Structures are given as structure tokens and as C-alpha cells.
Image (cartoon, rainbow, N blue to C red; front, side, top):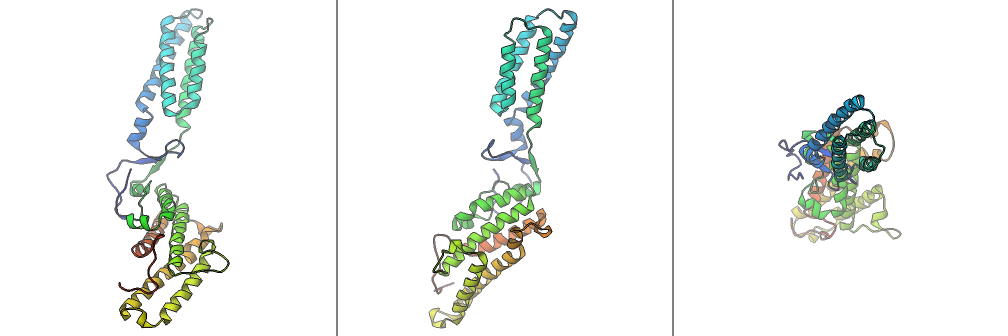
Length: 315
């Protein structure tokens, strides 16, 4: 599992990786070497070679004595099919495992001849190859390995401050890792929205008829504009110094302005199908960096579990 501490510090030493389907691998991230080991590709290749050798021997025997049954040939064929059956069970090759079970039953028939052996071996070989080619893996560029399955994409402080955004941040990284830029931006905007709602709760934004969580982003931004106006108009005596008042206003003004830019530039476009709503990986990575900066600025002061005072007492 890759977990560098900085977003810019892409790993250049890690092996290439692949993302397997979640239901087959709960960790999803598999190195190329791990893939070779988990599927035991050496054994697979050896099994196919053995099948082909026995199949060739069966073909030769069928031409020489088509009506006879070679016990040694049957033993060899059963042995390799049993091995493939075990391997298929371990790798989740359900179709091939079932075909092996059926072939082993056929091998118990009294009327089995060399031609039948040849046919079953060919069937198992094709079944095994079908299992192999039916699985698809996505190669991840070395430049994007950092993003794959990263539970701490924006750092530990953001992870602790905004736990509700954790799943979207991880998915944003995974989408970028496999170069699905538009999906990355979608999840990044959802993560940023979590931070916006925390910001609104911190400034005590309330609605008589609804909760903050049910309000649209535009409603929250408008409400925060009002809260900022209140801060500007508030008596300077509420703060220990003018510098602290100015710092607090700048903090919230910057956060609201940044989120408004997100909303206008990217978030709104994600909700509608049009030509401009697609993002290539480099642009998506840049957007992800903007969201990271936004959330990293908020995290030291705000979180889903704590709020700042109405008027700051210190910087």
C-alpha cells in the first residue's frame, strides 16, 4: 500500500500497479508482482504446457490405437485437471473449476477412450484461457501511483478534521490514478462541499425551515456572505487587536471566495452533461491540488467536531 505524506511527492520507486475489482480484492491495489503471485502465473503457464503435452500424446495415441485406453495417459490427464481445479478455486476461476469437476466425472466413465481424453483436455485448456483473458486490469502510470488507494490523500490533519470527506477524497485519488479526470473532479467537489458545510456550521449559519446539510451550495455561500458582513461591521472591541480582527475576516473571506470559485468553475458543470464538463488528468490533478489547499487551510481551525469562537481571541 502506498502512502506518501505529500501530494507532490509521487513515488518513482514503486512497482507498476493494477486496480482489481473491489469484490475480488477488497484492497483493490495490487502490484504487478503481486498479481503474478496471486494468480500464480508460473503455475498457470506450466499447467497449459502440460495440457498441451498430454493433448499431443493423446493425439498420437489416438492415431496409433484409437480404440485403446492408456491408463498412464488417464492418470496424467486427471492429475493436471485436479491441479487446475485447485488453482481455479484459489484464484476464483469459477467457470474453469466447474469444467474441471465435470471432466473428472467424465474420466470415471468406462467407455472413455483416447479421443475423449484429447477432447476433455482441449476443453479444459480453453476454459482456463477464457478465465485469464476475461479479467481486465488497469495499469497505473508511475506518475499517478501516489493517488491509488491513498487513505490520507490530503494529509492527516484534513483526514481528522473532515472524516465525512474521507471516502470522496480516496475515490478522487483512485479516479485520478486510473486517469478518469472527470470522476476525480466530481469526488473532489463533493469533498470540498463537506468543508463548506463545516464552515457554515462554524459561522452559526441557521435556517428556520431546514438544516444546513439540506441547503444548496449557493444558499450557504450567500449566508456566509452575510456572516462576513457582520464580522466587518462588528465593533473592534470584540477582538484583542485590530490585526486579529483583520486576520479572521481574511480567513473566512478567502475560504468563501475559494469555494465560490469551485462552485462557478467546476462544481456546477459537473451536474450537467455538456462538452465542457470533461477534464483530462492534468487538469483534474490541478483542481485536486486547489481543493487540497482549501481544506488544508481550514483544517487547523475548523473540523466536524469543533468550531472557532464567534470572535477570535488569538491568531
